[in-house]
Length: 297
Ligand SMILES: [Ca+2]
Ligand SMILES: [Ca+2]
Ligand SMILES: [Ca+2]
Image (tube, rainbow, N blue to C red; front, side, top):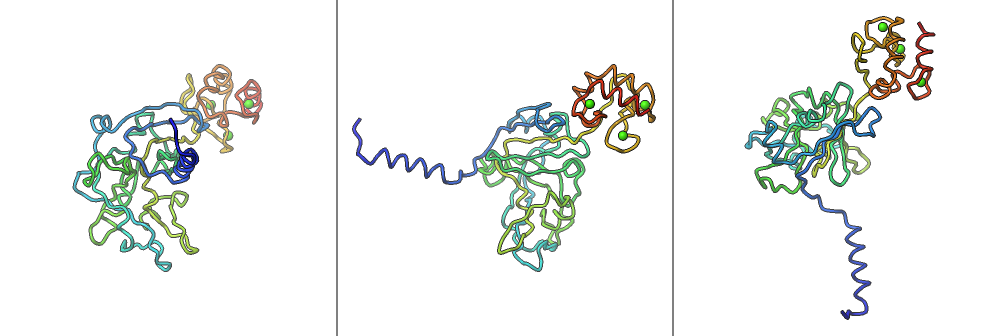
């Protein structure tokens, strides 16, 4: 086929421009749910689900007629948190249905106190929430939900699946379900607050927490001791130094801890967070730890 001289160059330019433009948010309908191991790198357990599976198998959140709102930046320097919830409520206002993040986490072993969950979009954008905000949220925050339906678009909602908080009306004088900036300040730890930078000021923006086009939910577990087979209970750290010398969990350091550790070295190495049982600090579970544990009796 014969083409004009300039055509290949123009095609290349068009391709380059297409790559340079930010990709439009694309709807997602399939979700990977992953719980990482103690190192937060290797996958301990995972599941892949889609919208129709979630709707059929897990409780549906949202009644289909109550709108839920997120507040954006107030853009009022003297009223950054705008507890009255009067500024910038137009940004996100949707009547949604979806699946609780908690129910999704429970598909892969769930979260425990101290764990975080990371909600990740198809393009890599992500936000984290801690255990409390997923499993025991304040009413002014409400349960975090992965929304896959809204009244405007039905299931064909371009920004779905999208993270929503089903906040109650307790913090809004008009009786609206708004997750406002003051709700964010009161219900989330500071590390989880979202800000929007403008004109030299960081404006709190609860709306920034509402990740769209979510493709992946990742549980990042905090290190925690598990009961060692043959022990009485969960291991304990009697002197609070971060190492768990009471291996059998009977509330005292004793020779039985040394014996149990020696017998279960392979299990401990495979199942426990290494740092909690690495008494000599060489980053592995080994016989030297048995010796160190015995010497510390
Ligand atoms: Ca200790
Ligand atoms: Ca013991
Ligand atoms: Ca060691």
